[in-house]
Length: 227
Image 1 (tube, helix red, strand yellow):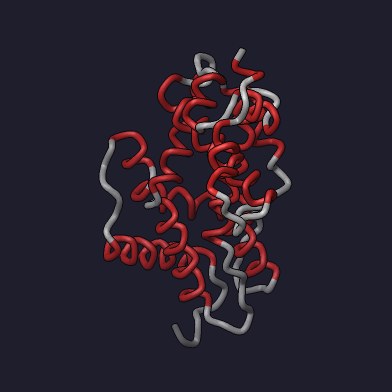
Image 2 (tube, helix red, strand yellow; image 1 turned 45 degrees about the horizontal axis):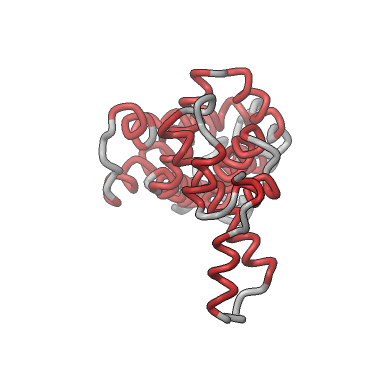
């Protein structure tokens, strides 16, 4: 029955008579609302018990609209993974600059990443994905494998600095994972697993600076002339 119901959101939007939003932007807003609803539903009930009717109700759209955007829960879960990945890319997309000292570049990159980990939406996304990875690891591996060709911002920066001869890194992915572990030990896992509050701005700056110093003492070929 619900699949044949008219889309209440579309009707209410049309009745306002507003013309500042194109149909494409309205569609994008609906899609975002559905993904937001799926995040809340998966977090509350888990993937297996999550219900498409409840997701539609949370998003304030018809069930038919949900299926117009997503074939099922697997497609919704993949959209959540994609959103999490995109959020990390947006926050850490600071390109390597060959003519600048390494330390301030790396500190800026780490501060961006720490700021992202303070974002409530990022934390909610991460909780959903971690819970599903624990419950059904094969699904999480499959989804992450589809994103495997997209390299995370820290890895891109480390790879570029190494290719420029300024870091003695033979495995950029491994070196980037070391950076991630140093940061997440303070600004991710305590908040995810123990409900600790986000770091203050002062703590973020201190952790970014100390992490950069540890990393560069291990891998930097020659000290920066400045910075």
